[in-house]
Image (tube, helix red, strand yellow):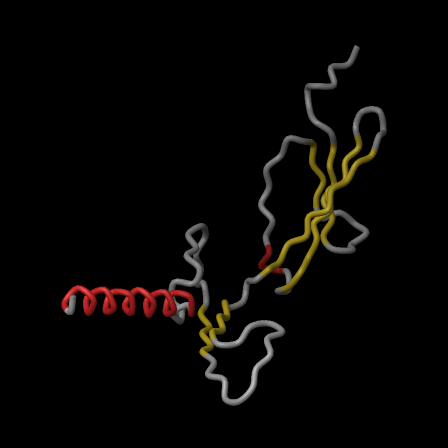
Length: 137
């Protein structure tokens, strides 16, 4: 009698619509997906497996590659309606040769959200009203 728990099921990894697998393993497995050869944009990783009875299964994982410099834009958003003169801040910075440590967005200044400005004006107005009422009772 065979021990089916000695090793896991074989899996094949496919990238995007490629008919040939980029790798084949027996599970469990750990591997590194090198995205440096992939174009920036959307990709899919498809994992296909067959168990000892011949039953097939698969899983599709969409992901986005962004190896190029990060580009942040402040002042205009996707599909936003604008008119007149719109000030736009664009910042682009590379990630260098880092391996694990990534701190995204640290170099890009952000504007103050409008709700914080509205709340500040409200609190200051209330404080001034309270001070005037207290002094002139």
